[in-house]
Every structure is written in C-alpha cells, then in structure tokens.
Length: 321
Length: 187
Image 1 (cartoon, rainbow over the protein chains, first blue to last red):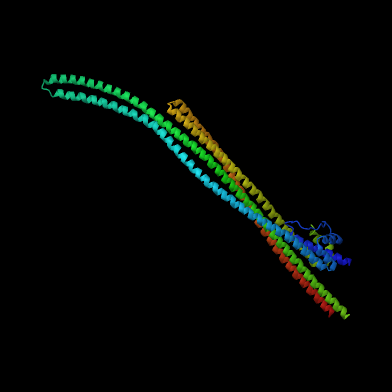
Image 2 (image 1 turned 90 degrees about the vertical axis):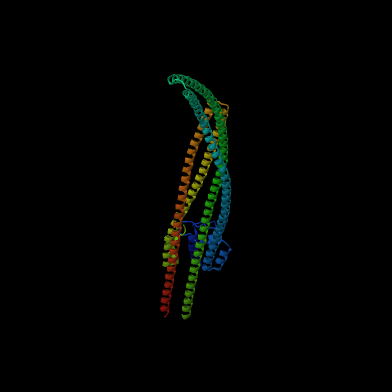
C-alpha cells in the first residue's frame, strides 16, 4: 500500500510538472503547490499538497486508484490555469476595447482642435497681408509725394524761363517788320530785344521764384500729406500686427491642444497594443495548458491500457497455472 | 524548478523503471529551456518596446510644449511690433519724426528678437521630433524582435510536439515488443 501511494504521489508529481511546465511563462495566480526545489519532495508531502487542492483529490485518494489521482491532478491544473488565462484574456480584451474607444475619442478631439486652429491660421494670414500692404503704402507715400512735387517745381521754373525767352523773341520779330534803316532798326531792335529779353529773364526769374515758393509750399503740404499717410499706414500696420499676434497666440493654443490629443491617442494606442499582447500571451497559455492536458490524458490512457493488458496476462497465467 | 528534477533526480527513473520516460524528461527539459529562452527574449523585446513607446510619447509632448512656447513668443513679438507701430504712426501724424523713428526702431527690434527666439525654440522642437521619430523606429525594431522570438517559440513548440509524438510511437513499439515477448514466453 505504501509503495502504491509512493508511486501515485510520484506519478502525480510528474504529471503536475509536465502540466505546469509549458504553461508557466505567464505565471497566473492559482492554488499553487508549495513543493520545495532540489531533490524530489517526500511522497507524503506531495499527497498533503494534493489533498489541499480540493474535493476531487480526496475522492481520488479514497478510490485508491493512482490513475484517478493523475486524472484529477491534470483536470485540476487545466481548470485552474485555463480559468486564469481566460480571465486574463477577457480582461485584456476589454482593456484593448476601452483603449481603442479612448484613442478614437482623442483623435476626434484632435481633429476638432485642428479645424479651429485652421480658422485662426486664416486670421493670421489676413493680419499678415494687411500689415504688409499697409507697410508698402507707408513707404510709397513717403517717397512718391515728396519726390514728385520737387520735379513739378522744376518744370514750372523751366516753363517760366521759356515763356520769358519767347516774349523777347516776339518783340524782336515786330521790330524787324518796321521800315527803318536796317542798321538802326537792327540796333534798336537788338536793344529792345535785349531789354525785352532782360525783362523776360527777370520775369522768368520772378516766375521761377514764385514757382519755387509754390514748390516749397507744395512740398511742405506733400510732406504733411506723406506724414499723414505714413502715420495712418503705420497705425494700420500696427493694428494688423496686433491682430496677427493675437490670432497666432490663439492658433498656437489650439495647435497645442491638437498635439496633446494626438499624444493621448498614441498613448492609448500603445496601451491597446500592450493589452493585445497580454491577450495573446493568455491565449498561448490556454493552448499550452490544453496541449499539456491532452498529453497527460493520453499518457494516462496508455498506462491504463498497459495495466489492463498486464492484468489480463497475469490472470491468464494464473488461470493456466 | 521542480521540472528539472525529472531529468536530474536519479530516483525518478528508478521509481518508474522506464527508460523512455527518462529520455522524454531529458528531451523535454532541453526543449522547454529553448522555449523559455525564446520567451525571455520576447518579453525583453516587449519591455524595450514599451520603454521606447513611453519615450516617444514623452518626446511628442515635449515637442508640443516647445511649439506652444514658440507660438506664444512669436505672438508676443507680433503684438509688440504692432503696438510700437501704432505709436510710431501717432508720432508721424503729430509730425514728431524723431520719436516716430525711435518707435519704428523699437518695433523692428521687438519683432527681430521674437523671430530669433522663435527660431531657436523651433530648432529645439525639431530635435525633439527627430528623437520621437527615432523612438518610433526603436519601437518597430522591438516589435520585429518580439515577433521573431514568438516565431522561435512556435517552432520550438512544434518541435516538442513532434518529439513527443515520436516518443509515443517508440513507447507503443516497445509495448508491442513486450507483448510479443510475453506471448512467445507464454507459447
């Protein structure tokens, strides 16, 4: 009887090892055997450990059949391991689903933030365009008004000179038409022409002076207008820059919100991947446990068959004897 | 572990008296050790992947914060430029050219300083983006390593199954041989 128990305990021990070994990688919690490492555990210790596992072992021990004990051990291990692995797989699957939902929600929030940021990006571009145009207007106004009126003043002065010269020439023509001695007439005409030309020159000088005065006044008015134009353009450009800056700040905030949501989505994706890994490992564990159980039950069946054959042979020999 | 006792404990074969069981235990020990090493490699690859993923997300967040700072500085620069430009315009309207020139210079300096700071922060953000991209590549490599280890585990498991099948066939042949011998003895 003691030998039978020892054989049973050792066989159960081996069965436990064979069943536990392929499935030990995930180390799920289960009603464990506290068998020590090192040399083989004492059979009575093994029996005590097996008895603590449940009612099915007590019944198997009471039957006295070592194969039933093996069967109970294999069944018990398969049940515990499979249940644990199944719970792990289900938990991981639920986690993966939850992470997927949260990932999608984060992506939707990122899309919303991106749309809003796009609207403010348009304001940024509008502000930039206004500031640029106003800056160009300010520059052109400053340059064109002052330079343009100086040229007009010069033209007016030149026109006054030409007009004076023309007047002198007309007087010379009238004098040249009179019937007087050609020599005297020429001398008088030349003198009158010289006087007329001098008056013309003087008139032209006066006109030029007045033109210059007018040009100076016009230039001052133009400078005032240019200053007004530049000032208005600068204020417009400044306001546009303020608008652009505010829009840039708001758009930056929404871009940050979008990036934050994208990072959240990536994090949820990573967690989902880890959960899927746990699910895969649990599935592998269930497969390993099932294969180990099949191996053990197959071995038990082979042992039972051998026992039956031996028993039949012994009975036949006894009958013959 | 307790399984090593199957092969290393000399009392086990004595209890069973079965050399095939002994050989099977030794073979299983070797093959399970290979599977264990593949599982360890796979677990290490996944831990490396998890670490790389965390690093990647951290870099992405840091890059986002850097770009936020860049945007704030740029926005402040633009608004300062605008405010200085408006004051400059006021002085121009008042024909106070000297003050207008000073405010115009202040406007340009504010904008230039802000642009310079924005460029520096954007460079830092670009470095963070590149680091995040590198972490993504590390994640990919770790995933590939984990897949390879898993394939090695599968191959080891299939090899174990084939070995067990052959051992079962050997055991059946052994049983048939014993039965034949017993039959001859009985005859």
